[in-house]
Image 1 (tube, rainbow, N blue to C red):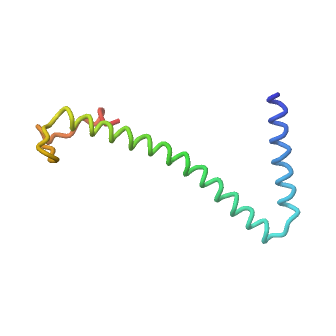
Image 2: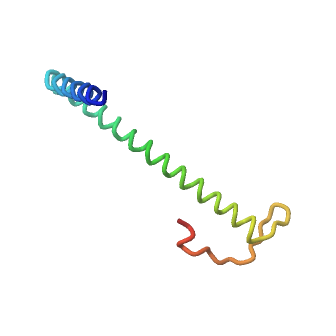
Image 3: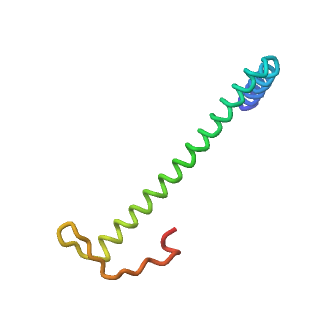
Length: 91
């Protein structure tokens, strides 16, 4: 089954390259620009997901520290200490 999937993907790639060779330089340039844009969008999607997870984790840690290490007077947070947590605890 997996061999057929790889064969189909290989065939599609070959057909795209052949079609790219058959079109003129202007359409080839437009196709290449489109393919580069698609590749960059895929990379941005991955970076967006990983940075989103990192931001969520850091926010949760900040909320936890605010609950444990200080006092709240209304909507004002007063920490017990202004020391930053150790660097190894941030990551």
